[in-house]
Image (cartoon, helix red, strand yellow):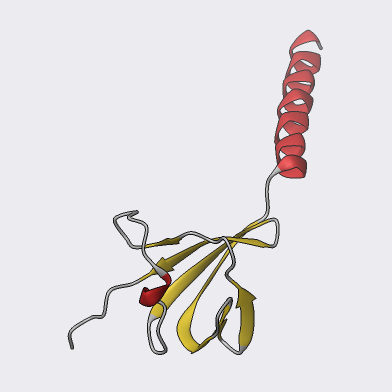
Length: 96
């Protein structure tokens, strides 16, 4: 009986820790696509416009790039944290 109570207690503690961590997890999302349009403060990817004001633009080596890298046809990944665009990753052109 004592082993059973101990096992149940351990299970409940683990369950509480796991369920609590899911409640506080930040919502992170990535959208990958091709730039369809470039504006002064926005880009369109997959038919949606995204405000890029004050958003860092990076390459795969984590180097900061200028907005000049954002061109129609470039493949990008848009990183969101809690529904806010936090980083734009620009991919190099691939030779086919």
